[in-house]
Each structure stands twice: as C-alpha cells, then as structure tokens.
Image (cartoon, rainbow, N blue to C red):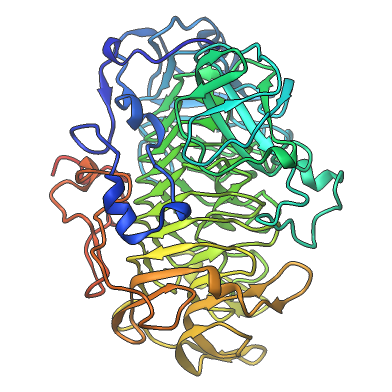
Length: 609
C-alpha cells in the first residue's frame, strides 16, 4: 500500500498528447468557467507519464481447446506474475468458468494477442464465460479487491476545502505515504445533495449501494505526507467536505492494487448483474483497461469501482441481453468514490445506458468517446441516457469533453449530480439506430426517438452544470413520424428550449427541469443554476450565450479553450482536425471512435495516420 509510481523505470505510452502533458492553464479555464464551478483535471496515468509499456513476458498461454476449462491455468499465471511483467495469451478461445478470473497481483499486465474481428473476436484472443447458461452469478474477470470494506475512520477536525490538498484530522492517523484513502461526509442534510424520493430514508439500504451508509459525497485520495494530524495528498479536494457533516478519512480494509493492466482482448458473456459483467475493476490505483472489446454482458460491461487515476481507453463496449434499467444492461460504470480516472477514446454502443457515474469522487474525465443507441428493451421509442454523469447521488466536478452522443442526460432518478462540466461535445438529439436496432420493435413500438427527444435533458436538482462550447442537433435534422394499426406518433415542431413544463410532440435542443423520480413532475427553477455559454444549436442556427441562469444574450462571449485537460492534439486523432467540434459555426469533423466503428475497426484506427 505504500508503493509509489516510478516513471523513470518504465517505458510509457499515454495515448494522448505526445508531450505527455495534460494540464490546461488555469487562466484559460477561468475565462469561461468560474473557479467555484470547476476543478483541476489531471486524470488517469497522464499525471505520471502514461500507461507503462511492459515488454518482459512472464508466461505465454494457449487455450486448451475443445470444452477444456482455461480458468486455472490463467489464474495460476496471474497469481505468480512478477512485478513489471506480462501474462501473454495467444490467439484462440479461452473458456472461463466458475467464479471467473481474479487478478490481484500488482504491477502485472494481462495481455492478449488482439481483439480479432470486430463483433466476434475471431482471430484474436477471446475470453468467454463458457458456463454462462448454468452459472449466472459471476463476471469473466475481476481486477482488485473489495472497495466497500474499511478498517478505520477518523473525523476531520476542520473542513477539507476545495482546491487545497491537505487536511487536519481529529487524531493522528496510521497512514503512510502512497496509501489510498477515502474522504466522505454524511449528506442527509447537506443542501448541495438531493437523494430523491425513490431512496430509502437515512439508514436504509439504498443509501449504501455505492457509498458508505448515507455518505454519498466522496473522494479517493493518495497520501503523500503525514505530519502529526495533518495529511497531505497528491490531488486537490475537488469539493469542500464539511466537518459539520461528520466528514471523515477512512482506510480501506483490503490492499489497493496498483499498476495492473488488461490489454488487447475480446471478452464475452459475463454475468452476475450490477458489479459483475465482463470486467470488474475494484480498488485499483494507476490501473488500466486498454484495447479491449467487451461484448454481451449482464452487469456493467466494464466497471470501475473505487478506482483512482485509472484508465479505460481505446476499447469497444457493446450490447447486452438485458437492455433494461437496474444495472444489467449498463455498458460502462464509474462508482464508489472513483476519482481522477480517464475514460477516453472508446465506443459505447447499444446498452440501456451507455455510461453511469455513481457516487464518484470528482476529477474524472470522460472524453472523445462515441456513445449511441441507448435504449430500453420494452420502450424502444424513448431514447435512454447516452453521455451522462449520474444515476446515483452525488457525482461532482466531472469533465465530459469532446464526446459524440445522441444526448446529454442530466439524470437525477437516484439523486443529483453537481458541478458537471459538459464541454465541446456533439449532442445530436437522435440515436443512430444502427442495425439490427433499426428493425427492433416491441408491441409495434418502433426504435425511433419519440419520447422526450432532446439534445440536452437536464433533470431537476442536477445543479450547477457547466455546458460550454457544445454543438446541439445537426444540419438537416428532421422531425419523425410513424403510423401503424396499433401505434402512431409524430413530432410537430422544433423548440430551442423547454424550461417550465411538458409539451407533447415538440423536439427541444434544451430540456431543463423534468423530474422522473416519484412520478413525472417539473421543477421550473432548475435552469437558474445552469451555465450555458458558447453553444451552437441547429434550431436557431446560432451560437448563444446565457451565462448562469440567464436569457439568451445574458452571457458574455469569450474565447473557448481547445480543451480543459489537454495541451495538444491526442495521438489517436492522427491527421484529423482537433478540436473536432466548432461551436462558432456548428461544424463537426471526424471523431476517431465514431469514424473507426463505421469502418468496422477498433477506436485506434486513425492513430499515426
């Protein structure tokens, strides 16, 4: 637990900018977003030089073939893997059974020989859950230990103030430099936090799903120094934790795994529901999942539970046999205090929700991903959440930059998200309906975007969102109509914004204030906390400036930075223009993850071109 990352001892590849720098100047961000509404985003391994390129192969394994179970052979290699080395899997199909693989050796990489043909893994390294029909309880691969058990907690003697990186505790802690800890507070009475009417009352079970009991405001932090009762950390506090709300620092009971990688695999068929799926990464720091195709799982297909400065990148995450609410059909998940992670250059396609962000700790960056075709198995005529930073209270200070999605959903069903920054994304307002979804029907309900079609849908209590430099809708967009003997619907007109109530048949660029939890109602003052500046929309065909809660024209036009976390064009853009979203004209160029999927390739297909 006291290990530190030695950059000099590793070859590195960030997958982002060539100079491996990721911090944007404070002055650039300050000009467009007030300081109290943002943080410093230095996500993932960018802060320490990038993902290590490990070249020493400890063991190379081939599949047994036939109906043989490959679990034990891979498990033994993972258990005995020396630090800094690789367990290499050759091409072929590896059958995983029982309780799945448990990867708990630090400083080791599990690397396949490529993902093979897109959609099947043929020709690459395939990890499949071979007993999924008879064993529905386990994922294919678990990385790390439980993020829900703690050995001790100490109260804060004073507030942990946003932007600082040290705290004074009520008594001397038994922590050491390099240790990962959790800061949290009781949020039952914190006015920044809204639990929502679907939750149990304080002390109830739903209030500990992704946090400690009743403590939804969280942040994972890395200790750099201890001096008496004062602890200093490698990252700043992204939000203020208040001693008046019993803020505490807690030590994890189990070891935090460090510097573990999963690379270049096709993974299929994981089961178990929420918390399981295909790849479940738990209590891991400076870890990564890279170049993976994750397909057809029940449970978050790739989940990061209690991870710190970890990375999911260059991966294709898609499809589920259960595309319904409840956790079985979510594609990517950040949960349980996860802080300062990077989710970059991935495809997330055809799940119930493309991503969920639940009780996270801030500083996370979700950037340059292609997210589309989120739907419900029983309601294909209503688009589900694409780009999102919610689905459990209280994610905060997260950055969503440069993505393509059919919508941004400020989801507040299980509580609110606060201080989310939505920057330079293209939010089309219409799902792609890629085959086979274009032919999908349920009781003659077609796969078409009739229910609450909008580019941006910020639900009630998702306060203090910053929406800057986005493009909403698209040139040539059209209203939809459908008629059959048993179901008909048609859209009547376009509207720039809907801020005070429900109107049938209207397609909005902005929809702000609806509340689903507890039965559909409307909170007409929700828009007053939203910062909307420099966004282009294809209804008015203009770039508009609202400031915070203001009418059109209330904001002050000003320069929009290229990025809020990068200083140079990412390598995966190749020769394509960056930034790819131009909010001054509404023009968009190629997003690599989207363009690569359309060519039947993994998201890195433009790298080096």
